[in-house]
Length: 272
Image (cartoon, rainbow, N blue to C red; front, side, top):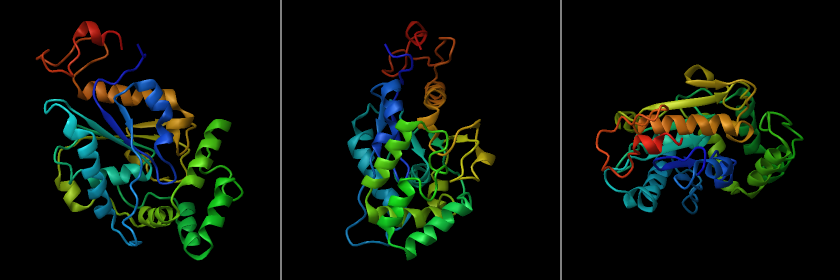
C-alpha cells in the first residue's frame, strides 16, 4: 500500500505552460484518486475567449468525465497549480456538484499577484515572434532561474518539454489572461462555501504576490513547488483531503456512518 493514498478523488489542473505530466509525482505517490487533467483547446478561431467561458467548458467536461460517475455521497476535491488555480476558482460557479475543497499550489486567490517580470514577458510575447521567445525562455536564455527555481535536472527538462509542447495560441492567450485577472468573478464568489487552502513557494518569482494568502509557505521553493518539493506538497495535499473527509492523523475517523463508501474505518485510516 502507498504511504499516502487519497481517500477521495482529487482533480488537479496544471499551470499554463504545463500539462498533466506536471503532476506525475502526485499521481505516483497519492494513488488512483489523484487525477491529472489537461487543458482543453481554445474554441477554434477564438483568440478572445473569456476566462469565465473557458472555465465553464472545462468544468462541464470534468463533471461529465469524472464527477458524474461518483456516488452522490462521495466527496471530491479540486486543485490547481499556477494559472490552473485561477481557472479552478472560476470553475466553482459552473459545477453541478461543486468540490468539497479547493487546493492551490503556487497560485493566487486575488488579482495583482503576477510579478512584474511575468507582466513584462506577457507584453513581449505580443510584439515578438512568440515561438522564438518561448524557445529562449524554455532553454533558460532569458529567465535561467524564474521558472526553474529549486528544480533538479529532471524537473528542468520536464518543464522545458511541456512548454515546448504547449499550444501556442493558448499560451499567448493565457499569459495575458493571468496578467489581467482581477480575482474570481462575482458568480464564482457567489458559488459560496467551498473552502480554499493554498501552499506557496517562498522564492516564487512568477506569482510573487501569493505569499500573503498562503496557508503554508515552503522555504526555498519556487513556482512549480509540486516538482521541486514533491514530498512536502504530497503530504499537504493528503492531509487536507483526509481532514476534509473526516479522517484524522490518529486513526480516529470523524465520519459517523461507516457505510459511506469513502469513509475509512479507524483500522484502515491507521495505515496512512
